[in-house]
Image (cartoon, rainbow, N blue to C red; front, top):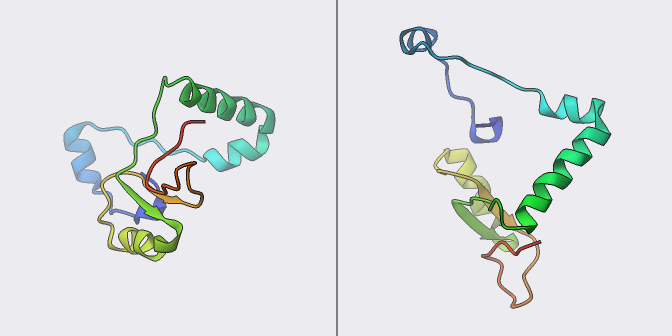
Length: 101
């Protein structure tokens, strides 16, 4: 989830009724404290992408020229998945695709 999409109020009563667990993480702090492990993790993820084992999911894709529309989507909290702003075109000049590594 992430704060860029806005914070949603947590209703503790609902958590109790659903017997749910809430887990948070401080990924940035861990990455700064463990730069070698962080780099290894990121390399492994990028290799998985390059090998086609995982594919990035994007709900909305915007060209760099349309970055304002992308941020408006965040402000309205109306995105349903990851939003991508393409800052570079692929070899065919397309900005609406995610190129393979």
